[in-house]
Amino acid sequence: MSRTKKFIIFTIIIIVLVLISLFILWLITKTHKLKFQVTNANLTQFNFTDDSQLLFQLSLNMTVKNPNRGFGVFFDSIEVVVLYQDIKFSNVSLSPFYQGQEGKSLLNLSFDGQQLMNLDAQQLAVFTLEKLLDIFSIKLELRLRMRVKIGFIRIKLNPKVRCGLNLPLISHGRSFIRFRIIDCYVAY
Image 1 (cartoon, one colour):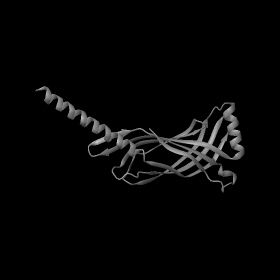
Image 2 (cartoon, helix red, strand yellow):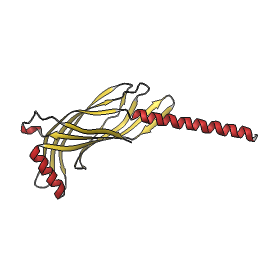
Image 3 (cartoon, one colour):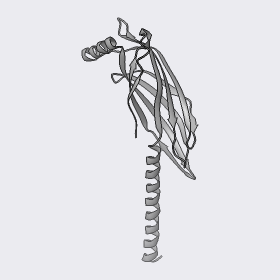
Image 4 (cartoon, helix red, strand yellow):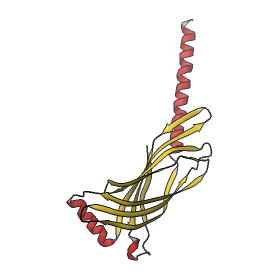
């Protein structure tokens, strides 16, 4: 084979690889448009016992929206982790599901139980202040394993969705105070 033919074949291979890379980059930016939103949240128990056990009862509703027309997303696993002052106190794993093109799914999540949490003096002071206000800052993290398939190309992604919430303790009769979403974003 002549040098010219080798050069042409090499150039075609490079162009194809660059096009595939650009397509994958485009696909990742499109999946970034997936929207996760907390639509409702109720915190009915959140207090510490004398032996540093956190007693909690939390329920959340989330919507997952896929605004893309070109593809659906397979959520192979979703682990939802709940944190207080960056300390995990509960988690739940959801069943795999498919989110269709321009589709919307509702996730109903419930967390209740108790967890040993050793808070330092500063964290305990924050808890005491939040207890006085009856509004607690809780973080939600969704650890996703998902696949996107367009034609013969399949891409696996492992993004995280992080949401910050200010949740009132509704067991004290202050039902007029609603939860507030501080921030909700997708991180790759």
